[in-house]
Image (cartoon, rainbow, N blue to C red; front, side):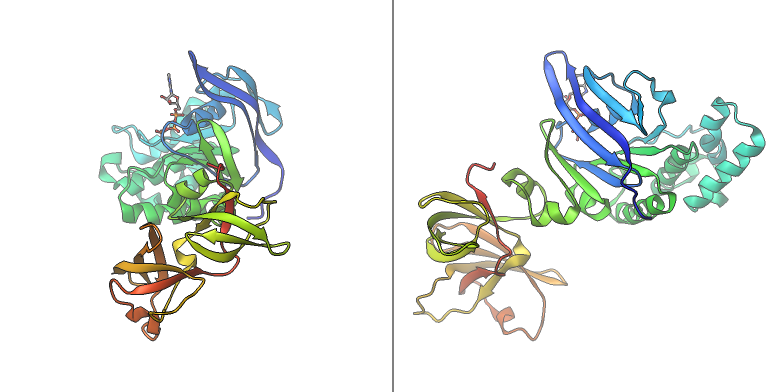
Length: 369
Ligand SMILES: Nc1ncnc2c1ncn2[C@@H]1O[C@H](COP(=O)(O)OP(=O)(O)OP(=O)(O)O)[C@@H](O)[C@H]1O
């Protein structure tokens, strides 16, 4: 579904502290209608706190929460048009699936005929209509998860909050649910705010990822931006595998390129920001952007030199660990597996040249931790 750029959740200068422990301070975030937004960050960074503030389970110590244009900062949870799916999705064990999903509507005294239609619609959406008469214990973990979502969606919330909702599932089911949740979200057009510490899950599911560290937004962007253009070393290291080469500026060659000493070799790197001679830089390279090249033994090259120490065949790719001659640093390399490629014959301990796909390096200042 097309996302209209209308803000649905606005957090303005939000503050939350537990005693002396400030979790977020001057926190600003706007989420647009229909977006699938993931809040991603390490344990304890404040993800759940942000979600609970939006839901109204926690009171803010300052700032404002606007939902669909209405200031709900001081409005109780049940009057906000949001619903939460928790990590433990706590279905009532003694009730049928139908009654579990109908529960909220019955509390609101919705007419039984309307309840029936809405519950069956919600169950159809998660493809579990035929389970209506069963008890939760008769469903698999994944099915219970879908019921929890049906139960949230039946209230027609404007925003659905999901807190680590897939973390209890096994790997295969989790993958399947990631796809299902994403297509469900598209189909419903409801804004999803998803919290996880799993970066792969965030990359797979989201339109937009908010990377949090200690209550601060380190980066806010599409999965691709976050992965390909991390703004700092924290984001780079938190999302996926990354190699970090140390570099020292020699001189600027032209508007784009800088000549630098990178891990003991002189080469040109693409640097957008202004730099000074002798300035220290970090050159970031994803394993799939690193290339290994054949070397003649006596070749004097500008390439960084390394030794292949490990090779693992992973089906689609061949993963290598290369030890740099210069300082023993280990570099991860991921190449597409192509039987006809002569480079595939690199044997263990072979001396190779380490380069990368031109312009794919991300260069940060040394202090951008
Ligand atoms: N009720 C509470 N009282 C005191 N401190 C709390 C309370 N709830 C959370 N905290 C603290 O607030 C900080 C942020 O917690 P929060 O649950 O938001 O983190 P999180 O990013 O969701 O972490 P996780 O991934 O481990 O769930 C933590 O340091 C936590 O100990």
